[in-house]
Length: 502
Image 1 (cartoon, rainbow, N blue to C red):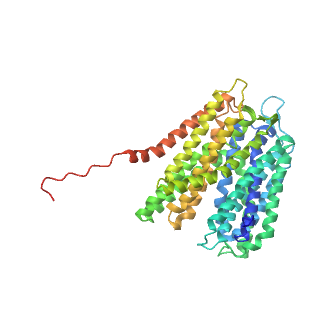
Image 2: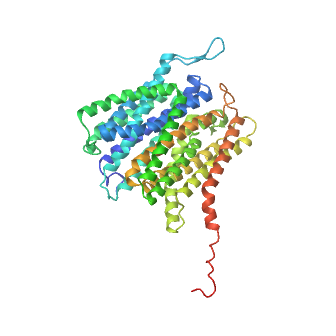
Image 3: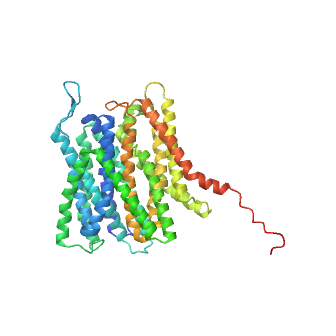
């Protein structure tokens, strides 16, 4: 028996594990600090900060669709991962230069911000978004390409890879969040950049394992040059979009309508009846994921500021930095993943495993419980404006359990319900839905604010979280009640035939 979990896997798996771990370390380390940086350094109001945060996270999930297409058509996955890692390093280190803090205008109206540093900050975000777009889907493609189609090690390899994602996401807020809120923003962002630099160096050293894998059939020198020239153009477009956050919502709306139209054309013109049924079911359930992520992604926005302002974070005499609490969801995912996996296996063996709609209903039911219990905790606070840390920990635990009931299931659903020839398109639609959910999350977080320039009161948080819990409960009922009704409905009596009829 060996302590090396990679020994029985292709050598490239350890490289992919390390690259993705450091990429997630850099991303979640920066994200843990982002809403504080926006509201405390640049003095954006809560509502403005939430909108910019929502636009940022929405673009992060939108860009992999474009990065995947460019990789498939011109770059190939290996070159795309390398380009994405370089852009990420540049973006994260760009955020180290925070510049002078914003200050209220002398006439009391508005805020004075250094335009050069603000635009540099937007450029850093644009580099990170574009880098994630090139790296995120293509590193997963490389993992899959390491194994022959029917290799029994494939699922185990992806399980190790998934653990790398959550390991990086758990460590980053603890370290980057603590540094950023204790010693200064640049230290936290700088550590995130160092993490991504490690990831790039690991990939450069181990990329020999991926030569010839996932290469584009149309790859030419001219195509490679064009793809590398497209990267700065994408950065410029994203930079502009960050200045006009409302346009991101309009872009998502237009893309959603186009995707829905294309799905209907495929379903009714190019699919058999059975394929049509699966494709339409998949599309309907993807809409449900928008609701889930719109509520869940309060974690990095409104819940992040709520933890700073309204949660008693003193444990054994030591105050925990609010940003460090962003590690909890990833820690809970690591703890709960084996348990939920065993739950599905046990229910399957007993013939009682819920279908995709049932698992989605359970996910949103857990989300509903998370927000209703948090609203209860706020209602029971002792009058000092702060609630016990346990209420937030319980909220994060329930949200993470819900994530495990929906996120991996949604990925599996696309492959199971969609015709094989349309799986790539439907995976893009799923990413688009996650992007729409993230943007909507920013709009929902803005509802906690009393006004355009006001910070939320604890009562404002309570009102929004209670409404989210009730809306999620209604969504859960809509998903589960039809199945419950069918199970409880008595079997139809056999039809009566006229007397004497055989």
